[in-house]
Amino acid sequence: MLNFRKATEKDIDKITEIYSDIHTEEESGRAVIGWIREVYPTRATAEAALLRNDLFVGEEDGELVGAAIINNTQVPEYKDGTWRYPASDNEVMVLHTLVISPKTARKGYGRKFVEFYEQYALSQSCPYLRIDTNEKNARARAMYKKLGYEEIGIVPCVFNGIEGVGLVLLEKKL
Image (cartoon, rainbow, N blue to C red):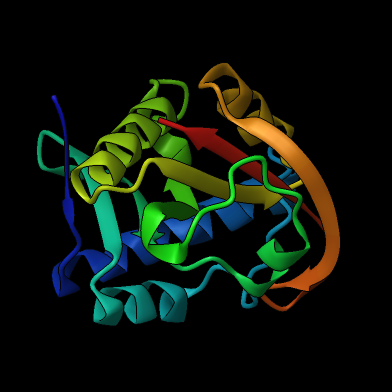
């Protein structure tokens, strides 16, 4: 059974390994996400989220299979979005940097992580959900669409240190 919890210091090495595995998948051409090794995401990404207490992990049978950052932080690029639902920061929950280990791909863990995110948002009285992804990431975009997220626009930007990103903004109201 897949369980979700706040990350701890002991999870950082495994999260960093998942980031590295995803970079390897992208560099080999087996995945198109739009991330760059040594730029984003990195160990420092996970460590900063751990310090903020907004890093979550998914594990099955004691094995860490994924991680995500979940908080009320709307990145500056969101100001350029034409959101369907105007909401204050404390009403919005944002899913950042969702990663599932390529070693456990195609088992529905990404979908289950999003379902956890939605339940967590409700528990925090945040009915408005926002997610972003690189426009190149067709797999994530298709998953979010299946889960009821609406693409409200694409913002051209430098994102997390990566030039030339078309940042897809998605939202859903619970």
